[in-house]
Length: 361
Image 1: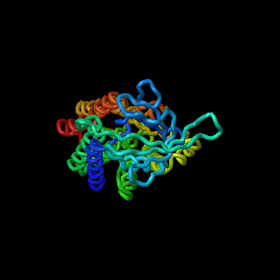
Image 2: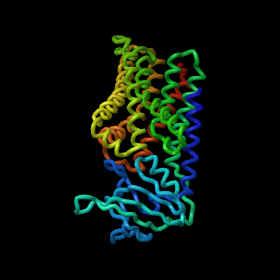
Image 3: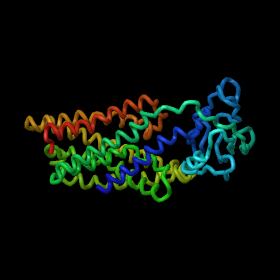
Image 4: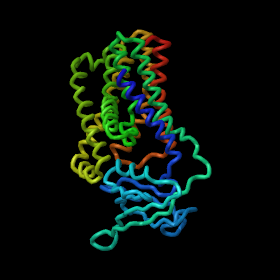
């Protein structure tokens, strides 16, 4: 219950942030996009109209692709050195519509050392019409996690005496944290670290709980019967994975230079753990397939088939995870994220339907 209430609290912060972001200036509205590259935030794309530094339909911007952002200063504010994602978000929050601001950039040139300069930036004008609600972002970051929390609480309270129901409830708590860094960066100090511990801890156990549930439902799988202590041994994985995810995410928030060094030296460990995370989902699907082929009664077979079909909705998200996190591929298009999010929504729907109509527990 405590974990559920904490998740609801942080989802509330996420909702407020999404709604308030419509009333704040953003670099995207000025035609500027940045990306972490190495140990710097780098200007990745400037939407120009054919002349260097002139953003299409906007005021001239004295930037070029590849500029490394070192600091940002809003009008009347102290310059904020951009050492990590936390300081970058704090700096962006100081921008005001219609007020000038400045960027300190490092521009690689022909000399041995890159040029450093402060560049005055034109004001970001307020839109004439308030942007529409970002329903895709709201669905992925708030509504889908909330649906998972409701499903988990419903299962946990409906069948308190069943240990499988307890595992399923924990599974949906983990599912609600499918984005381990969801919005923690916007929170005040103290709450920020608590949210990060909660999010990465639950996220890191998602695939383990998926395997643990289906290795025992509706009957122990062949692998579970042959190695009954395997679930206990595998418990070590989410503990190690959670510890690593906290270090990985927290370091990127505090220092991009330290994060770059961490990635260069232990990037192989991150990829290995990510593959183990996805591999446990694979083991869970293998347990589903093995039990469906086994000697189940018609009711148990029907229940497992419903849950297994809903679980297939996780596969697009896992494919994106492998593409983006393991293979370090480019960010997917927004419609791809929306489609994957819609597919993942089948998972809690299938569980809720099976519990209500077919008395899974």
